[in-house]
Amino acid sequence: MKGRGPVVLARFLSMGAVNTLIGLGVIYACKRLFGFGDILANASGYAVGLTIGFMLNKHWTFGHTGNARVAALRFLAVFGVAYSVNLLCVLFAIRAAGIDDYVSQAIGILPYTAIFYLGSRLYAFRG
Image 1 (tube, rainbow, N blue to C red):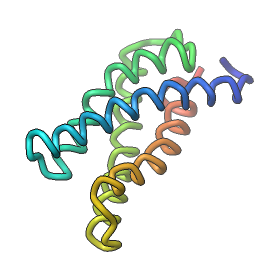
Image 2 (cartoon, helix red, strand yellow):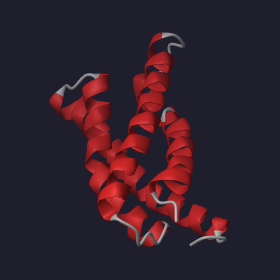
Image 3 (cartoon, helix red, strand yellow):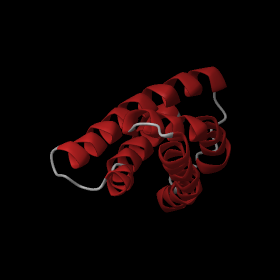
Image 4 (cartoon, rainbow, N blue to C red):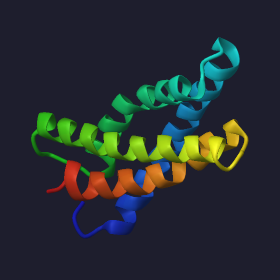
């Protein structure tokens, strides 16, 4: 997929949109149905999409043909950074800015997506 940045970005965003809907659904269900707190609900939602996200990004988004184990470890590292920033943004929005916790969960997706795309493209699935 080298040199096809717009195609890769479009694939990443479309795959991410589906994963985001699933993840947010899990987050909201965990909060509403199971009474989970914000941190546990957030972690649950992101955990659900992680394996699906790796497989789709590896094969469909980036067309990576390298070592799957190395890519998986790098993918997890990128996820760790993106997720940490996401969680900080969510907690800041809730606790410091007083934004509704459901809205704050959605706000956290923006920095997460930017970091995860760049990290996946430049590190996890680099050619």
